[in-house]
Length: 430
Image (cartoon, rainbow, N blue to C red; front, side, top):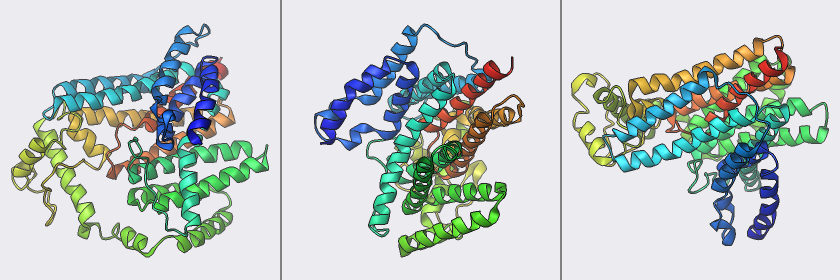
């Protein structure tokens, strides 16, 4: 049934894709985040939806006559520089060069989406449509999972979509936390217009929170607590906030199983948790890899290449990092991921690559503040800039324990901030 519905609807999507570049762009990010192939089983699964809409976006943009003048600004140029840096590191990889190049090509597609967001999005309608596509992708999946979690009384196991960028439950959890500020942006924008839409977004936010809790992701929980703390400090009506939070906690406590509390308690006793200490081991090995290859790093996926992991493991208790203690934890007998965006980039792209990577987000946060402080910026754009900054901060906090450095969603958010500043300068700074 799902195959028939999707294939029947596809011609209409293709038609509208070629009508306007921003529609094609929204469908590009929707298929990237929602992954339609995961939901179908028959002939509809043979269609490469993301490739179809990404190529459609490029063709539509190239043939579109009224192209706006754009400015990639410093942040955009830094992202392109980081892309070039990952190419060099992939070609010089100390691991399996073919694998590093394969993952570079995947990241190149992410940067291509980043570029076309800046090229195409120029109006409020474009921003809203693109954000709606994010809500109807990550938000839809989180809503489905949260609903199942409630209906099963907390028995449903929340996981990511197999074969997708959000296939890991921890990465899915972080993506859902990052989406909550965008839902709040829509909630504020539409609350005066429609009570139905207001209730829908309140319900979605509740389902996303429950999905994060149900994923048993400690990184997701930490990001969620940061987000909740931020809105509490910014709230003018803290009593209402406390009441809402209390109701949410009562609902959550009725659903989460006993093992959830056991897992979350390991945050407090991280030094005694084998899973966490395994991450610390991977962080040390990533740092060792960066010291051996300080400029360009080891290349993408190099740490997981067994000869590299084995070589570093042999020097684990000696050398310049002998002071970096991991207690009784030692490297596994198989290569592992870095489990941190910071150590992932450090090991794969070197110290210089990490500086470039961090500069992307530092300048993005600065850009958000600049938009908010601009007296010419309309209220909706200030609110959007603030919410996009919150999404970035959630990513930077939750990503500290995830190998999630090349996630499509975070680069899309950075691109939206650049497009938003271009829009404000073009429309309101004349």
